[in-house]
Length: 289
Ligand code: AMP
Image (cartoon, rainbow, N blue to C red; front, side):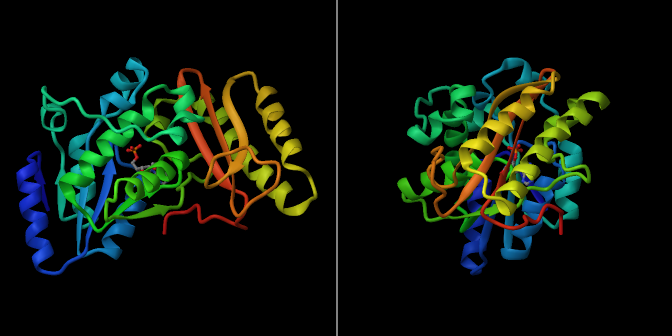
């Protein structure tokens, strides 16, 4: 496995791989790798002849400076993890490489970036889209792997690749959860044991909502109201949103379209968590395979 912070070195290695006819996969991450990330990496390794993992904690996508400062960083463990997973190349650039001081260009993703996470974290998707375009342009993969855990993010990246004519297949991998249902997140290590127990309510309410939708004639409006009420009754939860949207447009439709997804974002103490569950599929694979 090679590790580099150099754009030129990444380009050379990827070009060499291309000449050999190998499919190139990229897994963009902010490091502090857990089983959610490693499931993306395993999928990429199974799918591609050459896999690049990018490790970069991207300051512009944090709208809260405390969140950025306490975000876990563990480069040595991440590199060991990548080596174990047979990753070919790790790109771990410094800030000046990603954001040269003279740089001015950012990527505005339009309306989808203003909803939900975009509304509660102003500037978040501008930061995400800008760094993802940079990472994809540097690594020029055939396929890029993202987690369903960040539902709105993967949707925006699909649109971004289409809108900007990036010839990249965007692959969304299922959310990996702990045994108690909590979606894995790098921020989970910041929860104390009480908060950790409270945090499981996110996946529990999503699962109940899924099951009621599948097994009864309840309306979407009722389900939305009940989700909010359930979270409202847990004093330790500070809810940003809990709703059901069309999986393509993120509109709160009255009539179910092709795809439906339940979304939730809430803080437990000062730790903000998000989760989602598709209602249009019977079961989601939630375990690492
Ligand atoms: P991050 O390091 O948080 O930027 O995440 C990097 C990638 O891993 C993103 O595509 C995330 O959606 C994905 N990811 C994070 N947590 C999970 C999880 N629990 N299950 C699946 N994918 C995840």
